[in-house]
Each structure stands twice: as structure tokens, then as C-alpha cells.
Image 1 (cartoon, rainbow, N blue to C red):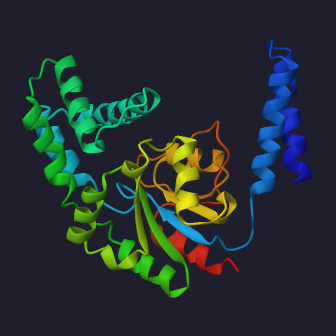
Image 2 (image 1 turned 30 degrees about the vertical axis):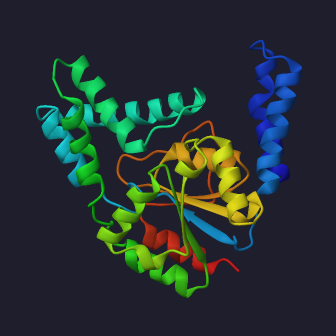
Length: 266
């Protein structure tokens, strides 16, 4: 802990030279210290799992979207980030739309910017159909089974709708692995808004420090850690942590390795 504080002070002391005011510097220092102090070495009470890409393999859906973009596979990442961007725009604007519907709108936007015409119905079919029938990553079921066997309570926590994730889990054979399913549809603010994580902790009747988020998205891990949760990052191909956020306590390329580390926590 002392080393963490010392390193943070050393690395940020020059901020004053760059014109950062002392109150802002003090706030940043305090936030960093609080994040470090909230970290726990004990076993979290609940493991929360993101769904898409963390548990489920989106390859088939991305291939379908790529076809709608005239085979422009280089536009897939732009489409996905546009979808995330406008989910946050929706949240900041105090609105709510189904995540799949936002994805379809984002697909139309990206297509239009590259001279590709996609109608609203066609865009929705390209997203919602494949999204609800995608398979789990190969190691997911065994990892979840091991975590349940080790006594963990497992809860899915997703930006997808309630009916959407229920259908996904039915088709992927994951329904029986989870104690509960939480969707931000019930509170109307997309992750990584802090209110979403606070809401999920309240739903499970536990403290934020007793929650651990498992996700393959740097933004989801960042949001959880900023909300006082713990985190385990699934560093699947193409996934990166956000360098300006605290680091999660676990960082492994698949859920099997993450499960092995979680099981050793006493």
C-alpha cells in the first residue's frame, strides 16, 4: 500500500507543473488511495459476469454484420465502438433503447458513412437474430461449473435486455449455471455508468467491495473498479484494459484460468 501511494505521488507530482490545480491533484490522489484501500484479498461474495464476448463468442454475429457492410471486415470494430458510444449517449441523455436496437442504428450510421445502404429492418435482423443464438466460448461451461462447485454465487450482468439474455442463455445452454440474471434494462443506465454497478450491488444486497466483475471489456472493468468493485479481466484477442483506470487483480486470456485463480481465494 505504501509503495502504491509513493509511486502515485511520484508519478503525478509533475501535474502541478502542467497547470493542474491543487484541489484537482488532491482529489486524484485521494481517489487513487481509496481504490487501493478498497481492494480486498478475501473471497468476493458474488461474481458478476458480462455476457457478450466474455461468455459468448460473437464471431458468427460479426461475420453476419461484416456481410451487411459489403465484406468490409475493417469496419467491424468501428461499428462496435459506435454502438458503445451511442449506448452512453443514450444514458447521458436520460433515455433508454434496447442494446440490440442501438447496435442496429450504429450499423446504419457506419454503413452510411461508407456509402453502404442498409434499411432499419435489415440492420435489426443483422444484429438481433445472430446475437441471440451465439455459442459460448469453449472453456466457459467448465469454468462456470468449477466456480459453482467452489461455492461461488454467479450472476450475469449485461447491457442486453432481459428477454435477450434469457434467449441467449437458453440457446447457449448456460441458464443453469447462474443464480440470477441482471439486465440494465431494469434500471435504464448502461454500464459503465457507476449507477449501474451500484444498482447491481443493491439488488444482491451486498457492498460494492464484495462484488467482483468478470468481463472481456476494458471499459466494463474500469467502470466496476471506479464503482468500488473488484475485477477480473478476460483478455481475449483484441481486448485491452483502459490504461487510465486501476488494474484489476486478475488478468488472464480465458475464463478457465480466471476460475483457477478465483478458486484459490480464501
